[in-house]
Structure formats: structure tokens, C-alpha cells
Image (cartoon, rainbow, N blue to C red; front, side, top):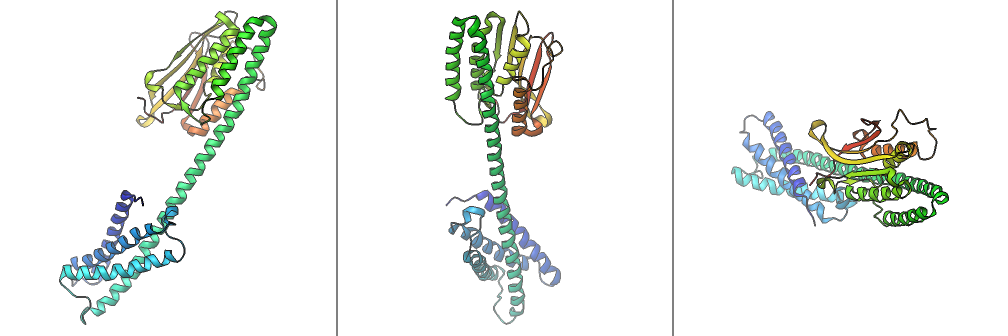
Amino acid sequence: MKIDWLDKLQRLLQTLAFCLAVSGIQYAFRPDKPYYIPATYSLAIGTLTWALVDFGRHLFASSEEYGWPKGIAGFALPLVGIVLGYLGGTLLADWWCGTSSWDSAGRAQLRISIGITVVAGTVICYYFYVNGKSAWMQARMTEVHSQATEAQLKLLETQLEPHMLFNTLANLRMLIGTDPVRAQDMLDRMIAYLRATLSASRSTQHPLADEFQRLADYLELMAVRMGPRLAYTLDLPEALREVPVPPLLLQPLVENAIRHGLEPQVEGGHITVQARTQAGPKGRMLLVLQVSDTGAGLNSAPPIAPTAPGTSFGLTQVRERLATLHGEAGKFELAAHAPRGTSATITFPLTTSPA
């Protein structure tokens, strides 16, 4: 049986505060007696009742759900706990205060004490029952939300992978008619790239180092077709290699830079992929992923229909995946890159501190 001692301490402190409040009310109606007497009785009865009920509930398997037994045990446990807590707590307080609650002088106060114990015990047990059930339901809601988020990310990823494969095959088709030898080399590299990608873990996140490795494979694949027209730099600090990111997060940005930045230029260009950190609001660290190129640029690029294959789809997927994972904290910006080209920047909070 695993017990959350921090939760037990929190419940104990709440019980003690409730007992002191009850003793304060008693003292207000009987100011002729010292305050320590009702306080002692209240604390002794309340603490013992809490211990019997709160530790006793772990004897029932149903307590694993929301912290309270089901069926008849759910009614019998607080009843037995209140009765035994009252008897044991009263005897303990009698011994401590040197009084007797069972003689003729104390019987009138005894009836009042029993009534207060029943009401107070019922209230505090119901409070803990509702509080435990609320915490369990909140945990379930969090779990369901996490599963929905994971399903949404998997859906976006399964949409993105065929899109990437379609564009790669289109590039290969163009090369077959002009240079069969290079087309064969490109096909071999594509098979190796797809094997590495499809054999990887199907989780919704992987280390940033794996993301950069897939980018290197993809850029090498594109370099077969473009030759010296494509140059690239991958800048990943050692401290950020294990930071988790969604798979294929940066690949659409690199693909977009090649298709709309480098390919329209006869001389091609250079692509730089960089990862870094920066301070965010309230001192929170942010991860910044940037893909910049020296291509035609936003203003120089010819107009493209928004529904054309390989244009807005990848960028839309990036935005949706960021929104699913990080909400408003995930940012995506597309801007001109000085002195020439385009820069795509992704920013979101670090979920793992850099080494």
C-alpha cells in the first residue's frame, strides 16, 4: 500500500484548523471555562477520528479510484471512525486535563459534545470525500486531454509524412528524365532516408538531435538533385541535443526554403538551421528554432496559389502542431532574412532544461 505522506500532512493540518475553529465556537458560548479545555477535547477527538478514517480508507481497494470506499464500506468507515474517535479522544482529553466526561457533572456537556462530534465529523468526512473525488476527476480530465493532444499530433504527423513523400517523388520524377544516374543515386538515398524515418519511434516527440539528423538526411537527398546549388549548415548546440520536439517539425520549413527560395535561383543558395535559447516572459527559457535561406526571398518570389501542392500545407501543419502542443506560447514567424532570403522561426517554452 503506497501512502502519499504529503497529502496526509495536508489533510492533518486541515483537520487541526477545523478542530480549533470548533473549539473557538465552543469557547464563545462557554467563556467561563479556560480555552485550552475545549481545544484539547476538540483536537484529541478530531485528530483521532481523522486518523481512523483517512488511514482506514486504504484498506479498501476502491480507494485507488478517488480516495473513498464504495458501497456500505463508504458509510460504515466514517461512522466507526467518528464513534471510536470520540470515545478514544474523550478518554485521552480526560487524562490530559484531569477531568471526567462520564460523571454526573459532565453528562450535560457530554450530550453537547456528542452532537458537535457527529456534526463536525460528518462535515469534515464529506469535505475530504468531495475533495478527493474532485482531485481524481481533475486527474482523469488531464489524462484525457493529454490523450486527445497526442491523437491530434499523430493525425497531423500522418498527414505530413505522405505530403513530404509526394514532393520527394515529384523531384525524383523530374530527375529521371534529365539525369538517370543521379536519379538512381537519389532513389538509393531516398530509400535509406525513408527506412530511417519509418523505423524510428512513433512517439509524438523525439530528441532535437534526431530531428537534426533527419534534416541532414533530407538535405543530402535534395543535394543529389541540386548538386552544388544547395549548401547547408546545421547548428545544434550540445546542450540542446536532448530537448524533445515533435518529429518532422523543421522538415517542412527546409522543404519550403528549397522549393520557394533556392530553386527559383539559377545559383541556388545556402540554408542554415539553428537552435538556440532565449529568455522569455517571467524568466522562462524559450527554445528558438530558425530556418533561414539566401534564396529569392518573400518579396522576390512569384505569386503562388495558396492551394498549390507543397506551399501552404507544410507551414499550416507547423502552426497547428505548435498550437496543439503549446497553445499561445508557441510562435511561428516568417520574415525576410538580411541581406537576402527568408527566415522561418519557431519559438516555444523549453519543456526540458538544457544540459
